Length: 305
Image (tube, rainbow, N blue to C red):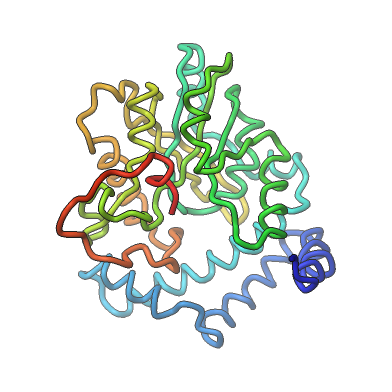
């Protein structure tokens, strides 16, 4: 049963706030960032532990600088996500663009379907809202429903309003096996801690043994989807540029694990170049690498986090 408090919070606070100008909202973001970091201390132990482990050669002062930058960016992202509730298509078009659309044009003309792997880097909400308007492809995004059904419905409606279609992880195999007369671009976020460590692919990422969901790689190889890495680069506050990098146009020819290794390497280089824009507040390294492998799980289980 949906709590009345959820409706009150959204309709009396969050939605009205979303109509305020972003310039004003960034002022609110600065206040929230100060309170979140210094007063509430939201997940500071998790963030600090992750940063120290990822950057063992950095000094305490350098770690603290990244930490503060992360909280400022994180609060900007929260504010921008609230703004996404009511932002117009015209505003979105001004704030998000594709750096190299010619790559997508080439693949589309060749009749290729695409899996875009990405991480929780910069503003992925603007990315999801804008992409369907910028490409010829029919765009899809894999998602795991929220436990809170009220906010799950709101998030769903927000993401599909511009043409993005959402696929639940449990529906992945039927979706990929279904033959349709369309060119598909499927967005899969793959930097969460995997739900099944025994069947994950392991490598070293940010100086730590890291398990990866291999669902995207398995799907690409089985259904012959081109694999790209996509990320959102911040041009300035509130303005982003999406760039795509080719991981492989021939996934069937790639050795097992190579697609996942390449993806994780590109993501690592991106994070190292500007670490404050990654989501350090989640527990990416919750468990050690298991000693033995057990029976494999389904592709849907691999992607679910």
